[in-house]
Length: 142
Image (cartoon, rainbow, N blue to C red; front, side, top):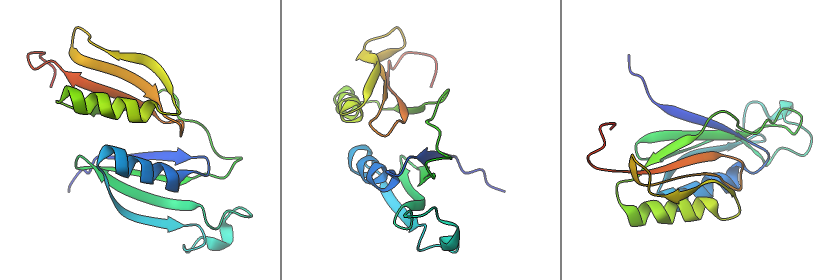
């Protein structure tokens, strides 16, 4: 048995755009994309939804980030969760935070904290909450 960490996010019709954005700005590698029309569930696709993503996945830092488009009546924005990115290089962490903030909403500005050289949280333009953490090397939490 093997446990594979995976994060799955629901999107509101913009999954393909979000996955391309994450692939470009987080250094991910897309493994697959399946549209509603290209799946065995094509007949169950909401009207006009055939070109939307049923399932897509990219690998970022060895972890699978998966997602798909939910029909408008089923979609709920993520709440009570956030995806943590631990980045050891300050310049890279600042770049990623800036990219995720572009068109999104900064929830906590990117700044030094007692545990991090830099930390900030943002909800990106796709509605996904992110925490960008550049930890202090001597802080006891890995």
